[in-house]
Length: 70
Image (cartoon, rainbow, N blue to C red):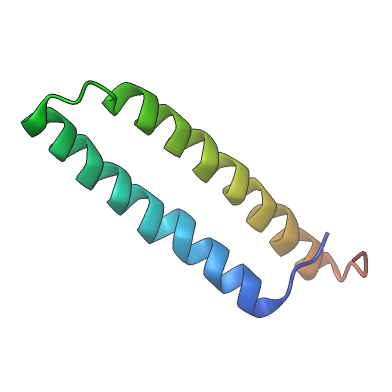
């Protein structure tokens, strides 16, 4: 499985910077305002990061092995 360089860069940026930052921000606001959803949101966020990270990792491994699958 290979993805384009641009898609790879965007997905990696999401996994490494955006999703964790937004999750942390939400968790802080949740604690301040007592919304009570921090556990659910952080669990979903972790699952999303893991899923996207796996896609990025598989694509990276395929690229370095010289894979040609679409």
